[in-house]
Length: 145
Image (cartoon, rainbow, N blue to C red; front, top):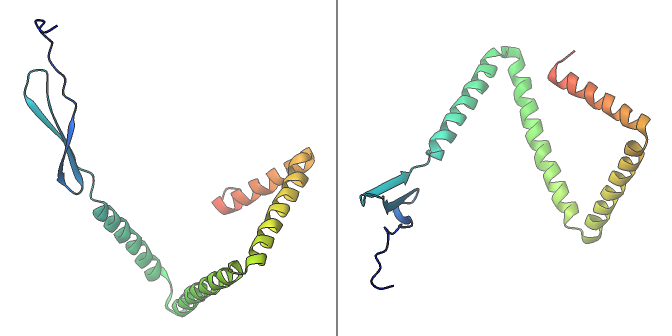
């Protein structure tokens, strides 16, 4: 064994830390030259900034397209939705903290889901009715006639 010549050794890539977001692998190729392969991901903050700018342009376009007498109503609706979301979140948090009510509501939810599944999925006529109503709703949302 000691007198036998061994073939070229393959080197496994060794990660070298270059920067927090860049990992480079260095290894020797078959010819013995050192090869450095570096992976640099896209800058996520630049991608997020571009998406934010697109959304801001869309909102500005919608706002400029709104007539002047409708703008106070639009602001009132937006504020009403924000206040309603805060109130709903606070109510759900308060109910969720009550130990017995939380588990009871989970049980009621499972029971209603089971009843719905049994009622609408076991009868072929009911399945067709549900399919038609879902298709009609989908068409009304997407605007298909």
